Image (cartoon, rainbow, N blue to C red):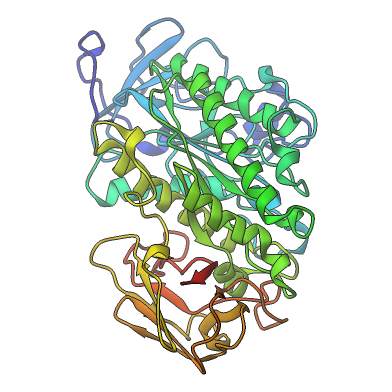
Length: 504
């Protein structure tokens, strides 16, 4: 993934052009493009389009490979050569030629994967990324980041790439994920990779209803094939999808058992991995990165999906959790299951953080297939194998996502939960008396040793509370120093996932 330029692509440096002359938002052209490209019904890019970057005499024009023109610019802060299609009347994007493969950021699921809840957004709060933040490095299909349909989408409508931004009121996690990823490369002093993002989830559908054999699943396959083909049109050998992100679960509440969801999740991951690799031609595996569902007020049965995601992460290879949703429900949730545009955008940044950790670990070893959850730590979670009971004290060691970080007890970001999120779910005796954090170990003190079998849950059930939809939450996180781009100054701390544990 390091920058490189093939020998046959070397040309002399042309007169550089300003960044602003590459892409200008133009209302007349927006209206023109909406007709010209005839996007999928319901996904018109009414607020987005870009002028032909070849207009005027400021660009040196050179035919480069079939249907491509090449020019140079220092507008991104360094001298770069770009490729622009010459086989379309209104090219939408200029792609840097220095990267051999674009990174595909693909997300699926229900409404929260696609900026759900637009009609209930707070006044004056709309999409965060209304204009392309990195028009050459963060890209999307020309029909937008959102591809949500109960019928299969015509692939001919996705005829080009475009700079990523949001044309609708909502903020899909994809757009903010792309922006965060590019910003991290820039902050590290590296020339950013080219990222392409799209989502193909469908609101209100259970996991089985977006799995193989359904239209939403087929639309994902179509997207991967089309985006891979489009990448080759710009001189790149294809795309690399390190992981499929899943932001889903609401429709499975009380309708899909914990065990059934795990089985469905395993098949869902296996099918997607096989089809993504077939579409992209990549040798690397495809991980499944999940946003963990928040438990609603009620019983443990209502938290089945969240706990099933814990189970899937621990038993299935190349499967992990990016973050638990209870933090977002408490800070950025709205009435019901959805989040504010800022909340959706922050979820995208957390997805991107997990994706970036995964990519770093995958490229650091000779055989990425050998990676497992122990070597790729994308969330704060308990060390299940290390849980111990000594008399009336249970110790739960924590596995931190990054070396050098530490666990914290936080009652400022979220109000204190009863016992900071812990409660007993099974067994005689052993009621919780106190919970404390000692280093990176949680100590749960009981009023008695309890019976032979005890089970305890964290942020997995509960009663109606200040956190609205989330009836259970917890107060443990790490002190990760990764920062948000959407909310400047905010740290993207890793909150402890929801889980249930059997105490030996």
